[in-house]
Each structure stands twice: as C-alpha cells, then as structure tokens.
Length: 381
Image (cartoon, rainbow, N blue to C red; front, top):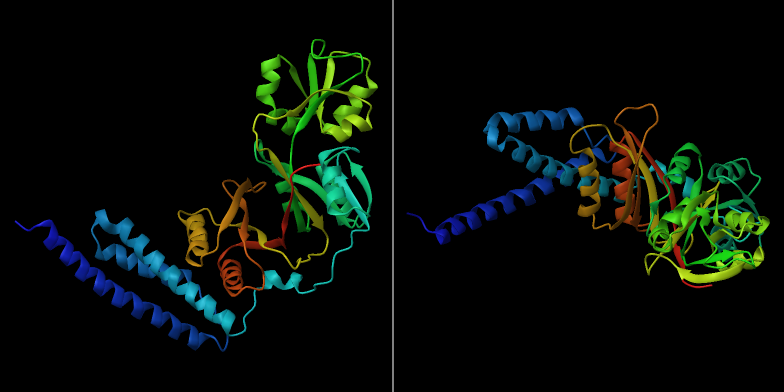
C-alpha cells in the first residue's frame, strides 16, 4: 500500500510539471498580444473560450467537469489579463477614462446640499468649502437635478452610514444622472436629543428625525420608550419641533441644528454604535481628479450568467487591487439584471488600473468610471 509521503511526492512532481506548463501558457499569451497589438484586435473571444470549455467537458468525467471548467476559465482569464496589460504598454487607453483627461479644477462657487440649515449635509458642505454660496433642497433627486441643469456647481449628499448601511436611493440616482463623484467626506455622527425649553426627558414621547438617523439610534429609542417618527431630514425635524408647542416632541439632530432652531439639549452623544460615521459624496457635472486621489468608483453590469461577477472580482485579485465596497442595485424593467457599484484603491494614471478598466469595458455590457477622489475624514465638530 502506498504511503502518504509517496502520494505527496507524486503531487510535487505533478505541480512541477504544471508550473512549467503554466509559464509556457503565459508566454504564449504574451506572444498572442504581440501579434495583435498593431491593430489592438479584440482580446476576449467568447466563442473560442466556449469551444475550449466544451472540449474540456468532453475530456473529463462528470465528476470533474465543473472543476475542470473552473480551472481552464481561470487560466484563460489570467491569459487575457496579461494581454490587456500588454495593450496598455503598447499605447491602448480605456475609453471610460477619457472624460478625466481635463484636469481643470471644478468650480465650487455654488453648492447644493440635501436638507435644511443645520443638517449633516449642510455641515459636510461647509467642510468641503467654507467660502461657497450654499442652499439646501428637500430631496436627494433635487441635488442631482440642480447640479445636472447647472443651477449648482456641486452637490453634497450622504451615500453610506457605518451603522444603517447604504442609502440606495442615492445609488439609483447615480445611475439616472450623468454626474461624477469628485470628492468624499466621512463625518463622525453623534446625535443630541433636543426639545422645547419647557419639555424634558419625562415629557418626551415622540422623537422625529431622518429614517437613517432613527435606525442608528434604534436601541436608544427603544430603551427610553420613545416612538420613532420619520422626518425628511434631521435639521428639518429640529425645525418642526421648534415650530410646535408640543412638549411630547423631540428631535434627533446635531448640536448645531439645536442651536439654530433654539432647542434645549436634554441628552447628547447618542448613537447605538460607538463608531458611527456617514460618508458624503460631492457630485459634479464635470469630473476632476484631486492630486491626493486614492479611491476610484465605478458602475458596471454583467450578463445574468453563472460566474460572471466572480470573474470580475478575480481580475481585481489578480492585479492586486483592493476593493473597498461593492453595492448592487436592480436595473429597472430588466428582470434579474443588476448594476454594481464598486469602490477600489488606486489612481487613473496607474498601469494596473488602466489595464483593469480596459478589460472591464471590453468584456462587460456596461462600465462607467464615476470618479477618482480622496475620502477626507472629519471626526469632530
């Protein structure tokens, strides 16, 4: 009976042969690229890859067919990655990056933000630019509309909270409007409970705030027996409580909004999670890359076939590019098809990023580079 050491020795010998064959296979990929590079002929040929996988399936038992196809799919993906890299070295350039060729700084003369004076978005807008003219609107879609039609040079709105998750409506609007992300800011979020001067903890029954804010303080509200009442935004809730004469009302807002609307703070530093942050994005009509940019956002869609999304993520892994976030949203009127929003580390002038984008735009049904920017952090006010 053969021993485990004998089997391992045979495995080592097999791996050695596979290594030599792999090196040869990658060398052939370089030669293929060299023959195509004069015309930049298409690298991905779905029909040829299907034929290869069908041939693999015929040569293997049913038990190995799926694993064999996976092995050869990965091998062909690695081969294509080498070819796209060679194309970039040869002068090819992704069309999706062309809008970013103009490096003229964006105008921040007039900023539109979501919410009322004293809202978190208003605070984010002030951190983004302390000198710009600013005005608030009542809906996320209004921010996109104002920037799209030129009434505002930039728009500020929240996109993600570390406790309550992504704001999906904003992602849907990124798909509907042809705007770009030109900046981002992360704020530490702590709420205060604010009410009328003649109210206190014993009189409060209903707490008004944005649905995301209420979600971030759900345990606190339940602990005190308060009824959570959704409002359009936090500052709007503070204004509503200020305008009312009801001592059972209170607002979850920031301290600036409580002062703005002459409310008494009866509790502070409220949040279910100790580390609670919200990320805000700056949307503009024209793209711009900051000199410190280190985050890239893209939107793409894939065919509804097994393994397509997995192959996309494999490209990032193979190129050593770190993914920070992946969000999916259903495509309207297209059953079982989704758009994906992905943030990753990098700059649009890096070789591996350009090779990645050239491959994605060549092989996917849709790709848009939404922005290349720096996420700034502000931890206190």
